Amino acid sequence: MGSIQRIKTISEYHRARLLPPPEHPLISIVNYADVQIPPKHQGNSWVFDFYFISLKRNIGGKIKYGQQEYDFDEGIMFFIAPGQVFSIERDTEATAERSGWMLLIHPDFLWNTALAKNINKYEYFGYTLHEALFVSKKEEDTMMGIIENIRQEYQANMDKFSQNIILSHVETLLNYSERFYNRQFLTRKKQTTKF
Image (tube, rainbow, N blue to C red; front, side):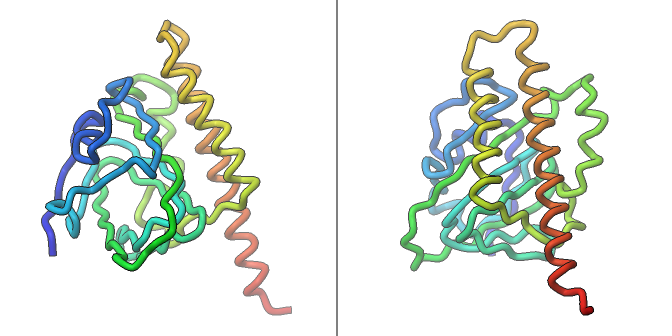
């Protein structure tokens, strides 16, 4: 069993995953296929001091989060709030190509905004939710469109409007996630209801 590794900043995350430095210190979008975990860190648990939202396919193993394990062969969204512990159990037999994206947002980027006050209303950031969010291809495309809007905005020359525009996109992404979770739970409920 490995140790618990704490990553405090987005720049530190990029270094730990052998990625180029982030273009912005408080927000980053990472292509999951580019992420590497050096052998010395495999088997460790992780704690991030920032929000971590991802859509991953073919993770080649399982993620343990709270008391649940998730298998990432399908398109699955995952939400981690600062300070939560999770681990990745690699499958050395996995051959499928990993893909997807990760959105990293430091709490300082949200400071003194409406989203900073409201982000706790999104229950899927908590351990108490016992299901990952499985997304359809259409839902995945919707999320990808939002992620591309965020990427374009933070890669452009930042001005006094940039943060509000990015936060509007983030809030849209969170609201769609809530809709998709609701759809998933309604679908499951209908499947298990006896008439």
